[in-house]
Image (cartoon, rainbow, N blue to C red; front, side, top):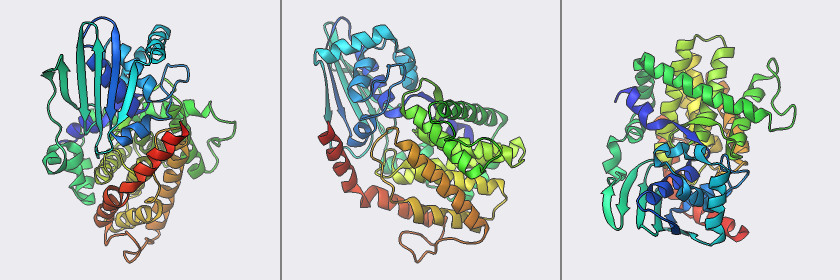
Length: 416
């Protein structure tokens, strides 16, 4: 696999939280298959996508949140080609027309608890025809597009063993040192794309500082570890609040993109590392974040920003610092043995705290690994090396925490 293929699949621009953007994108695709007044908008969605739409802010919406607004806005969007950047088209007129759908109770959502993977199935009935769009496994994978019950587009998603050809599954099947060697092959174009994405994410983080109390992010010259973790927190806070700035997502998550790229880029700059080395570290961190996401699942019962991006940060910084493979194994053990139990209870501003915790844990894991310390394999779910630890983490997330999402969903629905 060429690294550019990986970037095409895993390093993508997004406006707002990925799950409501995907819901809106599916609704816009379905709505485009008919004409005339909208009569009904229906969504069947997996529990984890619902969870991530529950309380998160929607860009350009004046503070609106949640899956119903995402669905209503998507059905009114005029241009399905905007993809995960679809909320850029939201304006006052679109908000008013979406509110009309909600006031008429023409929007309904059903959660399908049998769906373990991402599943967004949207139907829009209009006077001049009915459209249906189904996204599966990945946020932008159109599995089926129908017009009046006839398939007019899409292809089935590949999951499980059949999905080994996807870039994320490919890197997930590779070992840590194989991924490290892959970073040596990045092209000048790859480097430019990494720099551009990191710049978008850093801009969101810096914007987020203005939304938080003075002093939340210490100034340059103070404790670097505290400052960088809080800068990440500011970026995630701004994104979860629905601030209308584009970010570049990683492994299907804008929060992972921010959480990884901001501290790795600034650690490299402030540590005096040359730009080429920073780009290679960022590439390695992206690969590790995606590989860990493959083990956890696209939408997981555990927090991806703290677990997947946290592991990516740790190994990217270790690459910058010239660490040995053994030290990288120690860092993964430290992360897996420390933050593995952090649950995902949906996308919302509280994710900013979890991301900050993940960054803090990554910095500690690096410092301890460079000092030769790691949680031993005799402890809990820690494996005999980094690859085994990642496999155990995935087993915990996919099999051991099956009941977590059901309980989280019940708690969230009761709050409604």
